Length: 407
Ligand SMILES: [Zn+2]
Image (spheres, helix red, strand yellow):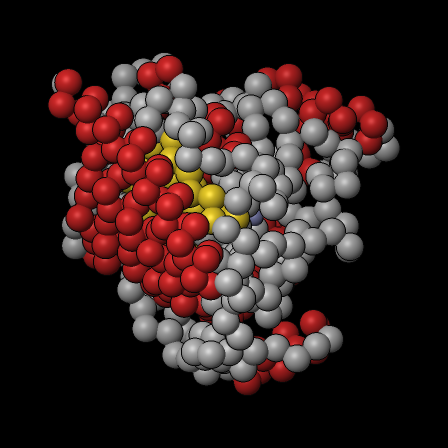
């Protein structure tokens, strides 16, 4: 491995304004079966909505093609035996039972023909985003197909085969020697990414998620702070079930800027899973679209202050494929790109999406205030989340700042 290059200078001129969207119809090939919750139509509908609103395609907002990640790139975050097993299990007629030692062939993550290629394309998409940002061709880049944060070094899990984020973070580290702040507000704990970097003090992971007491994968508590040299570089905020926007956003505002100040990142990797939305069928959080719009604004401010604006962003979970995902990720894209997105959904897009969904859909990009009834026990939930945030900060800030002073 050659010596890493120094972190690149801040993008200048046109590149300083540029935000790239990673897309190609081949990315919509990531799916398991017609009845699996990971419905790839959510991605195509997101991109068609972004296009219908005129938010992509000019010089400042280009579309970048993904590519297939190479074996060497996958090995940045995965074991060779695991990748070889995925390749074998991708062949026609593979025995799903042979996948079980690798977390494949389960109800969540079934064995499907061609899955190696479909998962490599997602990794190659997040690598394309990371390359554009680190090479100074764009300030930010967004791969909505990425964000497969549950995959482990040698195990698929939770709909995730290869961990595109972990590969891209390792690639940025090895190529440029950068410190990476990973921010994950998917409803599920970002366990795969956390585990891969658990002993690494150059990657700080922050995951805000529905508490593992109620939801897969059952991990991600404030005491899970890292291991060895990486102790103090894993931060977890398990949110109470039924947490709403304000309480979640307060937790983000209390934690992210302080951790970023103590850590000093060169780039932020942002996982934008939108399964915390109140309409999502798999989780018990009660976010509205405001959570996505505000989070990107908060993360963008931290990136502008701490790391010259650099953000490598992905999608993630999101199982209300028609009513939530396209709207949430269009807002994420617009926020990253600094574009004002109009609130009215284009009539043609809405008609086609409604026909395909077979049910009514929200009429506006943003959920109107008061669209959903307040959660019962709101005050209790807010108090619980507040205690969780305080417990985390009490533990982690001395570790981060203490070590900073020692240098
Ligand atoms: Zn999720």
